[in-house]
Structure formats: structure tokens, C-alpha cells
Image (cartoon, rainbow, N blue to C red; front, top):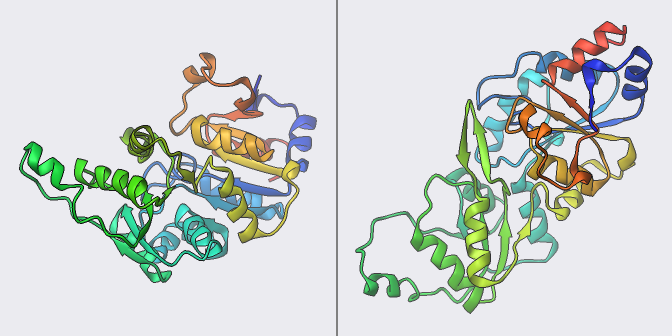
Length: 304
């Protein structure tokens, strides 16, 4: 059973803060309610961790913003580029690792596609346009398959249609293209709403092709490699992972052997904890109403 951070004794809190050297924190739902609004107390808690000389890294499944805008978003936390890890980093790292030299068929926002091009890759993207709703039109999708497309990549996008999904299927089946997924989220928290993520679309393609994707974000195991590549080797037993979801954050942290703190400011509620529907092994070690509680409990015991 997860321990409530605010219920811990002074000794337990001191042992908690002494138990980790590195903190990996999710972003949306943990530090931000949406793109612009910082969660109350997040700034103070991050500053506390820095003052305690903890190594800090921000691990997000969000690659929808250009790097400069994303960095600007993190000025409130005094974060630098080297502290940020996103799926776009993982994907470019993976493609370079396998010496990929073909074209990429991409479903993703413009900033995501631009980042791949800036990394030196040839990106193919089909604009979403209405097509005539006939069998002939549907059959036409399978024509003009580009022979040099060697990988299909799916990430969060506001423009997804049948045409693009079917093209992914064709490239995987006919070109034997590698199937890569960036953000592996069923839902994306934006304010009080949950928006459809890229995972459902990736799962449709998986079901039709029978090919499982390589997940280059949380909770994909390869994502751990890019984190280690970015920050160097670390003792996973002395890493605290802070997240707001079970399907991405807690599963990822469990697979990596990290300590787990689940905050209830994102996609997981107290009700979800009471009616647990996941593997028992994915339960968090600690739970908190908000990341703000880190600063609150530290102040109570004189750590802050």
C-alpha cells in the first residue's frame, strides 16, 4: 500500500529524502496544469530539491513544442536543456544508433516533424484533406507507396485521418518499415480535460498489421536507455520518479526499478487508487495530493 507523504513521521520523512540522489519528474499533470499554468507549489518544491543537491531531470512524453519554446516554459524551474528529455530526443537517438538512412513517414505536429528534419532526417508527411467517400478512393490509398520509406513514426497530432493511418499500415506491410511511437499516452491532460493521445492510433495500426511498435517514450524500455545516455549511469535504487499516471509513469518507473511518487494533480485520482485495476507491482511507493507536498513536509521537519 502506498504511503501518503503528508502522513509520514519526521524520521520517515528524513529517511525518504535521504533515500534518493536523483529525481526524474514527469511534466504535464505534475508541474503544469496546461502549457502555461504552473501547479501551485511546484516552483518551491523543485527549488527545495535543488537546494538539497538532488540531480533533477524532467521526463516528458510531450514533443509538441519547439525546443526553444519548451525551454522558455521551464525558466520558472531554472532548468537547462540538459535536464529535459522528450520522445523526440529518444527517436533521433534511436534512428542515429541504427544508422537509419531512409525516409520517415510521420504522423505528428509540425514542431515534431521539424525537429526530425533538423536532426538530418528526410520526413514525409501527408496533409489532412477530405477525400471522396467511395471504395475507389479508399483503394487509391494503397497506390503511390514510396519505396524508400523505411520507418513509420506516430506521435501526438491534432490532424489524424484514415488516409494517414492506412498509409502507415501499407508502409509497415509492404516496405517492412520500422514502427516507432513517440508519446505512448492514451490521454493527454490539458487543464481539466483529457484529450485523445497517440496510443489509440498506434494500437489500431498494431492490430491491423500484427506488428508491435517500438515505444520510445514512457513506459517503453528503450526510453530508459536514452535517459541513461543523457544523464550518465545512475543507481536506479536511488532514483525517485514523480508522475501522475499509472499507464505511463508508474509502469515505466517500476520497469526501471525507481522509487515511485504518484501525485493526484493529473490523470490519476484518489478514487483510482482505491479501486486499483492494474498489476499490484505498479502501485506507487508514495502518493501525494500535489508535488507541493514535498515543500510542505520538508518545511515541517526543518529540511527546507
